[in-house]
Image 1 (cartoon, rainbow, N blue to C red):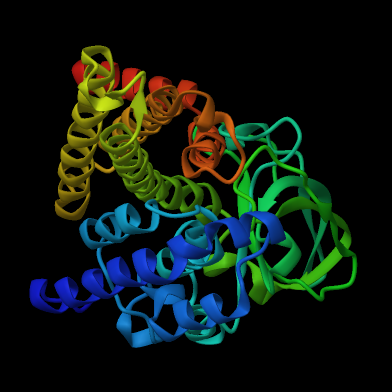
Image 2 (tube, rainbow, N blue to C red):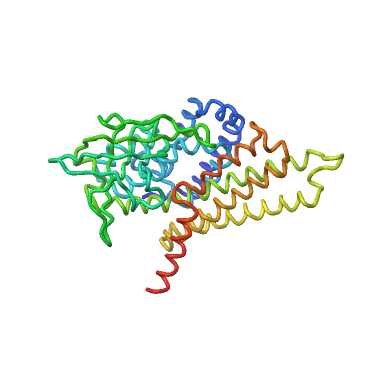
Length: 385
């Protein structure tokens, strides 16, 4: 894969920075109230190549590596998380399954269209009883002649109502010690038997839609099996999720920076009893804790991304970064509401939306509890090898 030079990437990052601050931030309330990202912002994101920034250049993407990906994630996190949700799956957990494990024909058929945004992908892994740990998967895929037939139910699937392609994880065999029996299938949204449920009503992240996906006797050809290999499925899930965890950690840092900036601006311009809020030492202590968390998170994400790119650590570091940064942003957002006092509890105030938006970051792409198990178990295994 061709490396994007530091100079070229700096231009891309600055363009994204300006787009987020000048075009998206002023329309956050509009996005929240309408519960959708306006078409002109979607078109602008597609024009900038954001639907394919992490897809290799040979397939029409920008070909950014993980270290560059997290820098953009920190920019995306600064505004409503619905923005990055729109194209995050194309670049992340769904797109990377194809990049890393797809056959040549699968890549040719889908990747260029994912990169332009012509096709929106959804990553259909989570289901009732199987979320952060795919081993509990109950959706089944059975051979029928040359075809596969899928049956099951997925839930909380991001972009499901607007998706053109579902990357579906299904069980093809009972799990064995070194074979979880999980495969991955490419299922176009218009495949008979695939039904998308009503849009979920969520706590936050308005403008990003999730829903159930029902698979009832869904028939796909043998060519729909990712990599043409049943065994590729679980590896595809684990690899994509590890990269996705670094991206989410970067998003968390961006959101924390925004919450900090809103807190500092409020403390510097508002008064209580004739005294500027920012002059109260206990408010300064809250700002100090926010700043410290943001700086630690940013340094950690960059170090974890560096270790991922070099191949030094693609398991423990992504989980540690996601754990720390998503917990950190929850604390920073909570402090931001506190700094604002009663105003911070009012709808249409940015910190109120941030507080709700970031709560999800500790749940998806592996809960904080799952990250702790990955980190702790990984350390013990390293020590006993």
